[in-house]
Length: 182
Image 1 (cartoon, helix red, strand yellow):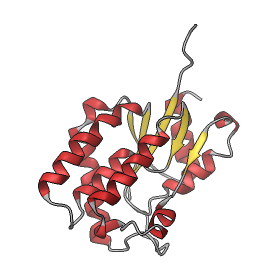
Image 2: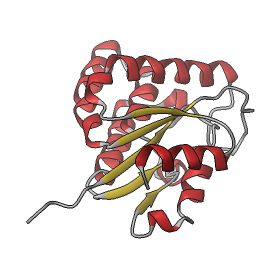
Image 3: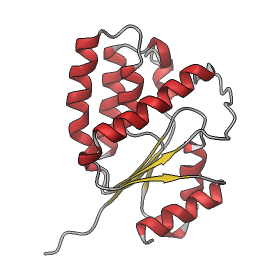
Image 4: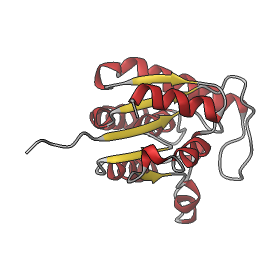
């Protein structure tokens, strides 16, 4: 029996670049009927007492990693965060020491290969919006974006397909459809 092709699609990028908006728009398309969609869980995790952004802890980032790994157990899924995002926030967490960061990144990188496609969204020309959860410091946003790009470069050999997308939500959708062939 032939195994059915999977499409595990992750959208990566720093905060406030439209990842959740994009995933919610993809949800409406017939090409993605039958897919699972995973969007913003930060508010729920924050309500559990898990520190976010610059206050992240090793334990908190481990919960985020477990969520991303859980998502990858679905055959056809589109997520508005990836393991690379978790790695970037871990790398920039003030409360996590260097050795723990390196160990975490080494371990987490093993799961990057589970994505069939990772689409990177740049913050270029996109204003930072405050949703009362995300960090609103522009410098921190730039730091996360810089780190995401470094991680993509460092672990490119583990990524099946990495594509930079840009433009309006509709333009991004078209780019995703073109790349995936859907």
